[in-house]
Structures are given as structure tokens and as C-alpha cells.
Image (cartoon, rainbow, N blue to C red; front, side, top):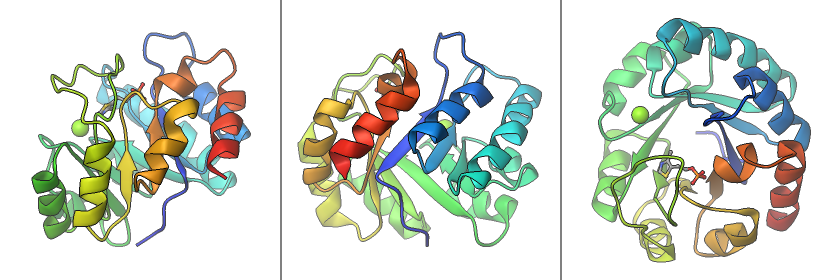
Length: 205
Ligand code: TZP
Ligand code: MG
């Protein structure tokens, strides 16, 4: 099991103009050492193409590179692993696709799901949404720091907190027990994503 860097930076251009690889380069330039590629509207080919461009950038910077949703794409580009939601392939099936030595993370929204993910063999669990977010239509009420504390107490693996987290709130989320802070909008929506990464890393240092 790999440890996780303090910032879990998600490469999702949202509605912006930036190409995924350009965005990834900015996040890496700011010091991000874990990137997850999340391109919900992309075709399989476009996702693969973006992943093929980003994986060498990430690895040249010494960063982990994960692909959201798609173990097949992660395997095809030799990513470090995959991030799965509750509706995606189960952990065991994803591992069969990925092959050995890859990370599998699972999105969870309560303690029960977090415990189940660990029982299934997840390397880390993501918990959220912590705060209100406009980056994903979760259909869920924000969980607040209480979920971070509860999951931290319930599972032995790294905990990644996600949902509406900003550089300003990141330290409180970490103090509640998150090993890593995941962000989309606070990085991607910043005029200078590299500076936003530097800001959050300085606060978490
Ligand atoms: N899963 C739960 S909340 C969320 C995801 C993918 C969106 C996180 O984006 P942001 O902009 O950091 O709130
Ligand atoms: Mg998914």
C-alpha cells in the first residue's frame, strides 16, 4: 500500500477551457504529487488519450496517477491505480483488470460504506461530500467533519476527504482525521491553479 500525499488533486476541467494535460501540468508545477483524472463527459478514446498524455507528466514529477471510474483505461496506460464509485466495478473485479501492485480507492458516503470498501480490499477510502459542492450532482447532503472523524475512527486505511473543500477549510478537514484532501473546483476554478496548489500545500505542511 502506498501512502497518500496530503493533496489529492483531481484533473477535471469542469466547464473550463483548459485541456486535461495542460491542467495536469499546472497542478504538478504547483507541487501536486497525486493526480486523479476525472473526465465524466469524455469518450473512452478521449479519456485514454488524456491519460496517455498525463501519465508520463505525473511520473516525471514523481506523482501518483490514478484514473477515475475505469480500470481498463488505468491498465492500458499503466496508471498507478483507479478510483471507484459505489456504482463502478467492485474492488476485486477492478484488481483483476488492473493487475497486481495497483491502488484501488473507493468513494464512500457513510461509515458502513467505508467499512465495506475496506473489507473488499480498498487501499484507501474517499469520504464526502464534506461541504456543499457544485462540481458533482451528488444528491447528498453535505456530511461535515463528523463523517471524517467517524470514518477515521472506523477504518485503518488512508482517508481522503472530498466535496467543497478549499485551501481555507483544508486544515480543519485534515485535523478531523483526513490523510489527504481532494479538490476539484478550488484548484481548477482558480485563475492560477499552480498557485492554488502551492497555497493548499503550504497550509497543509
Ligand atoms: N465526489 C464527492 S463530492 C465531489 C466528488 C467527485 C466533487 C468534488 O469537487 P469540489 O469542487 O472539490 O467540491
Ligand atoms: Mg465512478
